[in-house]
Structure formats: structure tokens, C-alpha cells
Length: 283
Image (cartoon, rainbow, N blue to C red; front, side):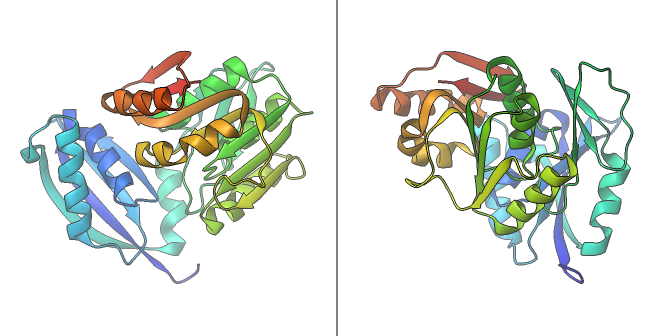
């Protein structure tokens, strides 16, 4: 990917619109976001995109996201674009990313030395151009569910991204059978590299693609996706689950939509976990 310039979209918003804009950028196809707060009550939300992204399409997704959150369009004060050379990507992340603790897990970039006790499970991640560094609420919710419920057997990670959830399961239960899939081939390559970095490279079966009939069922299935994709894949996700299914990437305002589809499929929610405006459902 050397020589490639990524499209960066900077959104200036009032503080209470931060999560809505993060969601809108991801729905518009952002590979990831980062947010910084200012003292005057505004926030700067940065979305990283493929070079071909259209600003008008991003703007439309942001407008829809603000409506979902019940916020006025004026909450988005400014929207600008710039280019970021590929070789500057890791440098940008090193400026902002610090280790994150989630339950027993400590998610840390490969260049840091986190202070973790013997009871902690350290997961080192190099983001590359795939995201899922443990800092976003949806990832944290999945990690909390894994920490609480997964004790071994088999594990399926649908939409693995950087591979963080599959790596967490592999470290938590060394004898478990772990499969992780993603439709993005670049993400799978980065996930494999992260698994090697965490000495579980031979323990996780990474596959390019979505959940399919040839993927065996698992005791624990984790799907950290967006709500529309979750609804579309629910029959396949339930069919692949022979224990617990964790659905993340859902706004609390979207709960009824997902729950209605679950009831149509004769499935029920056992637990709702929440972090800010985001929820994860344990089925």
C-alpha cells in the first residue's frame, strides 16, 4: 500500500453530537475514526477513508445519523477533507493511542510497554489500515462479553477487523478452536500479523469472506458489525451458534429493530450490555 494517499474527513461538532458523527462516518464507509475534545464544547471527529470516497455521500450519512440520534443538522458545524500519505498512518496513531483496559484484557499498541499485573491478558495490536483497537465502545462491549462468558470450546469472530476479539479468545482459552472471518482481505492480512505478534498465529483460522455454510458452528459467536448487516446476517449467525451469540455495533435507539427480528426468528435476548449510546446483545 506504499504511496497511497488516504482521504481524511474532519468533522467539527458540538460535544453531544460526537457519537452520532462517529456512527455516521462508519456507516459512510470509514475505515475508522478518532475523536478529540476541545475546551469550548466542540469536538473534532476524524474519519479515514479510501481515496475514492465522495464527500456528498459522507454528508448524507452524517445527516441520517444525526436524525437517528434526534439531533439537529446544525450540530455538524464544519466538514473538511484532506489527504494522508500511507507512510504517515502509523505515525498519526502513535500520537494518540494509549493502552486500554477492558476487564482482564489490556489492549496495547506494539510500541508501548503497558504496566499490567500477572492476572492481566495483554493483547498487542498494530492497526495498519484496519481498525478495532479496543478503544471503541463496540469493541469494548465484545471484550467484556468474552471475558464474562467465554471459557473454552469453539469461538467464531464475524467481521474480525484487526483480529482483536479472536486473539482475546485464543489467549483466554488456549485449547479453544478459533475461526475469524472478514470480507476485507487487507483486514484479514493485518489480523494474521497481529495474531503472530501475540504468539497465537497458529491458533486462529482466519478466512476472507462472511459467515457461510462451510464455516462450522461454534459455542461462542461474536459479530461486531453494523445494525443493517446484523439484521441481514441474523439467520446465518443464529444457525452458526450452538451456545452464546454476541451482537455488537448496535445503537441503543436500534434495539427494537434488532429485537423484532430476533423474535421473528424465535430467538430472545438474555442480556443487554451498554457503553454510552452503544449496546451489545447476548443471545
